[in-house]
Amino acid sequence: MAALADALGGGAPVLPVVAGTDPEAIVALQHEPLPEGTALVVRTSGSSGVPKAVALGADALRASAEATHEAFGGPGQWLVALPAHLISGLQMLVRSEVSGIAPVFFDGGSGGGNGGFDPEQLLTASEALEHERRYVSLVPVQFARLLDLAERDRDAADALRRFDAVLVGGQGVPLAMRRRAHDLGAALTRSYGMTETAGGCVYDGVEIGDTRVRIREGEVQLAGSALALGYVGEPALTAARFVEDRGRDGVPVRWYRTGDAGELLGGMLTVTGRLDRVLISGGVNVSLDEVERVARDFAGWGSAVALAVPHPEWGERVGLVVESAAQGDARAAGFDEVRAAIRDRLGAAAAPEWVTETEEIPRLAGGKPDLAALDAWLTRLRASFREVRGSASPSSCATEESQDLSYADSAIRGLPQNDGDQQDRECSTEEGQ
Image 1 (cartoon, rainbow, N blue to C red):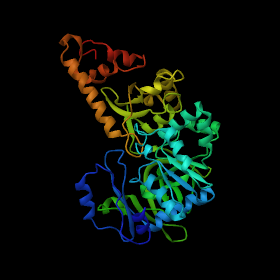
Image 2: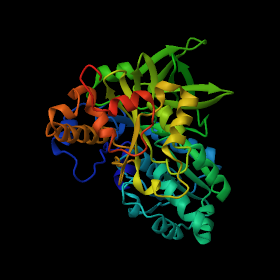
Image 3: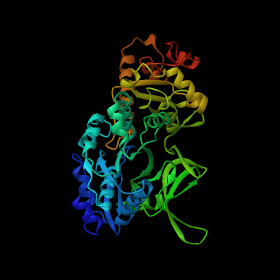
Image 4: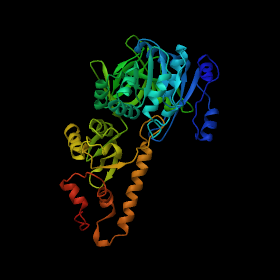
């Protein structure tokens, strides 16, 4: 907090790191020139496997904090339950520094939903909050566990309702989760933003502070005082992502290209997914984020992650991974029901081929699914089935490529029974496959 206060006051810039960070990466950043006015250098979570270092100025950080205070009706005391080396956790510290109200730290939330989060301990920690206005920021997987507790424990529900705002971001918040929060009387606020915007800058679809939103060729683009200075040591990437246009009055406006797909309806922003999370199946574009959004509206499917998997006929198809604990709930919807809903809403090409369960979705520190780790896991899964196939008699199966996923599919719960799937699972001649 002392280092942050110094940086916000024009002192030495700060690079927050977490234990286990590659020392060579830190040294490399220390030797890179920083944009003038840098107060913080924040490494992104790298959900696609490629983290970036973002330079943020003190003015941008303060503008973001003040916009949040304005949106919430005034400053309050924050319960810090997110990693302080990511912008989601750092911004709670900035808001605390700007307001002069000391935060309360909760170390039971540092797992970002990856096994280290205990909702009961969070509510116990909230008892240390002394200010009349109480705030907390969570990722969806943490909030889901908090709702689970509140639905079965009246005291927990009362404690949850004592928060004046529960800010949830980092991923989309499914409609089912929003309904549960409403039924419990929780003061949910959905946040959209990123490191490059100094944290959340759109709350419940509406811009805060002086943030501006526009859609260009389907991409969400953001402008305002909270924009970062750029990427450290990557001038080409900075120029590509931060662009300048002149408004109708001729005044230049700096915009950040988010890479997110979205739309503005009635002045409210709806983010539909990442532009780079699109597969092409049989010539049809399919948004993996849209598939996840439909699946997560069903009971037991809140953890669902959609991935692109190779397919011998269609090029790529959708596969789903879901946490097994949620699937054990008696209220959980069946795969056929979920698959049918995805097909109805998004088209046949979006219907997942299969779903497989894992004990726990690997997550990054900020709570987002670690897509690179999941892809690697599926690669190992397919390789293991190749080994099984290699030990089988030559007459028992078809070519390696056509059977790659079908052998894996046979061990995965809930396979749809259609002609194409049945043919893939049959061991026949190479020509038949």
